[in-house]
Length: 166
Image 1: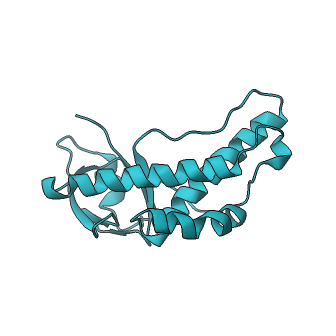
Image 2 (image 1 turned 135 degrees about the vertical axis):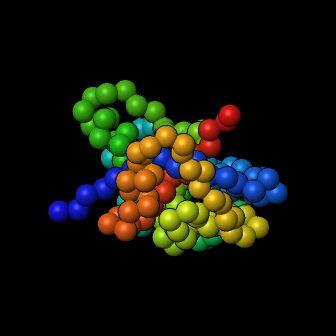
Image 3 (image 1 turned 45 degrees about the vertical axis):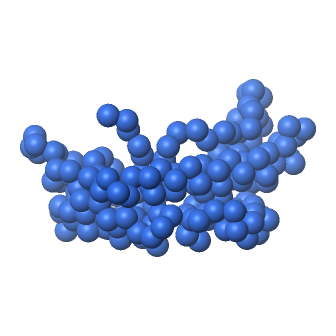
């Protein structure tokens, strides 16, 4: 049985690379919204595209040309758009009111192909190259960081980078 854990960890982003992460997020949201737009149909849920392969085959090359994102980030953004439409289709089938998904919050999904995870830092794919960020360690103890991130019993699989304005 696989056990998954989530441990929120703050990143110390180098000042000179903040704009690169912000631009990466803007482009990621653009790709996710383009995917949702491509997959959506106002007429019937049966006309909505709910397979990653169909959306990726139709959008990938164009989105790679339009953005400076790495291949994996473009694929993750397309996947995010498809999954959102798929969730709407399920609600629509059950008679609930739905509308085309729209992504506005500053977040991006990273996996082992687009991020290199260490116990005390992470290296993230971004426009203009990788951004290396140290983890900001919490002062209180015990924390999920100590329990999961520092533990060799757990491995990193994916991370959602989220921007929280201070």
